[in-house]
Image (cartoon, rainbow, N blue to C red; front, side):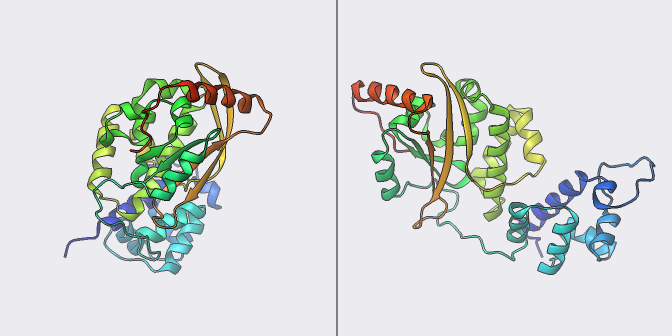
Length: 290
């Protein structure tokens, strides 16, 4: 019988997490003896989780299916946070991930999300879909980041743009932090279908193009989209500080409206007014639908 691909992903994730922990971090004595591999040994993880070493080895190899109780014990041992625990439970089939119809095909932005984008004039807005595809954006987003319309539709992917567009690398003053976080979002998205052909192609392409992406992808870090600050150095209006918020579409939970807002009266807010005035004077015809 063919093994489920998600079991292989689960085993790889557990292996990556134990490699990041030292004996001292989990209360084990450090004997000072050299270790053949970094982090905890399999038998140490098994002992701390109160399971047999053979069982844990088979779990990392994708040969057995773990119960939720065992996964919870491993989550405690490996110091997993809430996002990482959700990732593990989904891969193990203990938490249902909503399937997407026509998987492998690019999503189409929901009309109500498009309408919301159009109504945002002093706020940059994007609709991010499965595998961090950029499905739509508004005029302010294009003015702040780039003309997404010049990118072929098949290549309009947020993570891909972070690593392949030099202008975006310069735009983010904290590019490395943002890019690494975006990779963790992509890894989290992959729990629904770790062997989606479009995801596989994207990962293979970026792994060849950029060693940082390859390193961060193989580290198996995961995170859900949440709020936070964004720091930009815009070529026209200078340094900008935004707060990022994310809203999920009820009709398609794999579509997320991401907005960047600025404190009223702040330098960033004044800069947005300046950009908005330029947008109003620009000729019509820019299409913000991916």
